[in-house]
Structure formats: structure tokens, C-alpha cells
Image (cartoon, rainbow, N blue to C red; front, top):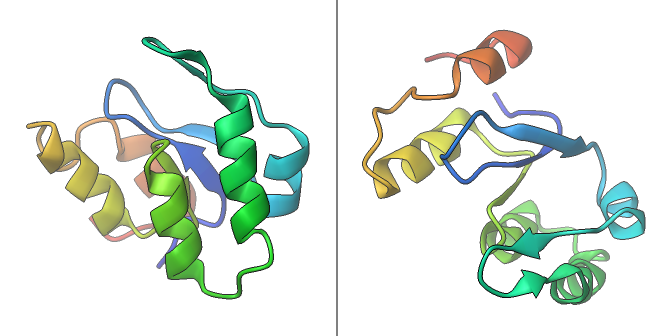
Length: 103
């Protein structure tokens, strides 16, 4: 089962809901990076390039660079936790409960 939304998750705290569609994401992009500052235009370029894609895995891959999870499965969030050395379910209990995901 997938999370039916787009979330920001960098494994420093709970996943943060962004929106439910690429169209909404395109219209409301603002993202900063602690090292590079405002990277909204970079994200906007990526979103514009993938907005017509019908391949969800292509969209997920393009957005993963920004720690944005597009209609992802729990295992993708768990993989992020493992990547940074956290327990598998760290910060994910609310997401699991909200979407009825299998832990």
C-alpha cells in the first residue's frame, strides 16, 4: 500500500505532508537547503520536466534528490531511515497509522 500524498522526509523528524498532486507542487514550490539557500527554482525545473510523465517511478526518482517522497511505499521511507542509520520505523508511526500501512 502506498502513501497517497507527497511528503518531505529527510529522516531528521517525522515526514511532512506537502500536497496531493504534482500540479499543486508545481504551483507552491519553495524549498531551501541549509548549504545552498533557496533551491526552489531547481526543484521547479525538475517538477516541470517530470510533470507530464506517466511513470511514477520516474517521478519518485527525480524528486528523491530533494528528499521528496511521491506516493511512496513504506519501504521507501524505511530505506531512507537505514541510509542514515536509524531504526526502520523511527519517525514513521504517524504515517503508518494515517494510511493503515503494514509495518
